[in-house]
Length: 465
Image 1 (cartoon, rainbow, N blue to C red):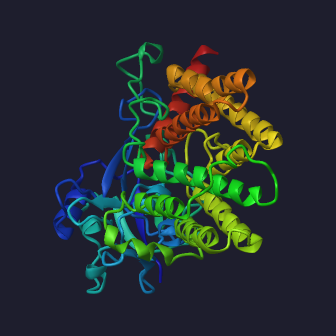
Image 2: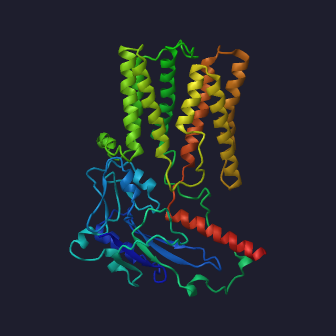
Image 3: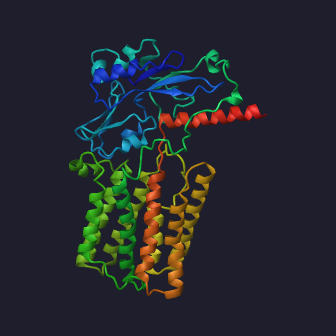
């Protein structure tokens, strides 16, 4: 039977007794917090309620952390519904924390694996309620049976994503919704709140933390079309790079380096092969399987029978599937900011580079225009929404990736093809780095910022009217 937390917004005072009880009961490291207090309207903006959330893992019925874990380390207890992590299987890839909108999964830098609230399963076995529940002095946090109606209502500051969290929230009473304004006038009050789009907002994903993945995905986006150009050259497509054959050892080395880079961000690198296990659900598992097959089959093609179209095209198909899987990894439901197709998507980049490597102007034109279009409208979106468009970096990317290569080709043809391709690749490096710099994942703190910003804007609009 699925168990559930029951939380009353009217009773929580934000005293953190539940958080402390959790830390003591589970003997947590000083920098690890499984249960956290989030305050809605912390600046006390007039006419907007101030209340607190006590949140940990909600042991969701449709837990995305369990579904997408590449090593199947996250399971659900049949008796209580508790979502649990097997630390002996976890590889510390942190992907479970990306897909969790409640920011419940934490990376332990001592053990190098993920951990989180366990529903105090050891206490439930002895018919004792979780420590956070027994430690709450006001009765705001309780424990009971899961109701199917849980999650049907929406609450300001609480992420609602349809994954059926096992928490029932008791809404604020009408008397608590609108605090009386006494000391200040609404139009004199300036809210000191960081918008979700501000530079102060904490990002769960960053270029620095995911640099190995940025290099790996970009390497794959170059290697697959370069190999494909070699396969196409056997059918007289006349690629630009027909004079630069793909050496099997270099190809294998590049592939191995790519796979090695994909493991550098793992907490438990020795367990990396286990990431192939969840091929049915995890795009991480699929990208590694397809990319590994691409490297193996491609090496066989280059070493033994480069005239075999079947082997060559099989490798191309595996490489293309790997690129699609890489893009799917980042198509997370709780992704914020720019959620439309990104100009740095590896499949789009690979098709554009395939046109460059094969001299096919149709591919160059279509996908070059698509990349430039997507890049431009994304920058406009950032500018309109108060985010830093990185003007200098934007200019360098456009000049290096589009303007300079076109000018060089028009004036010199293919005489400086290496310089042309180098300039294009520099632009792609910039775009891919920006992709990771722009990634934002939904968390309770960001949901609070979003909803509070909207409520403040609505209140200001009402005042002006």
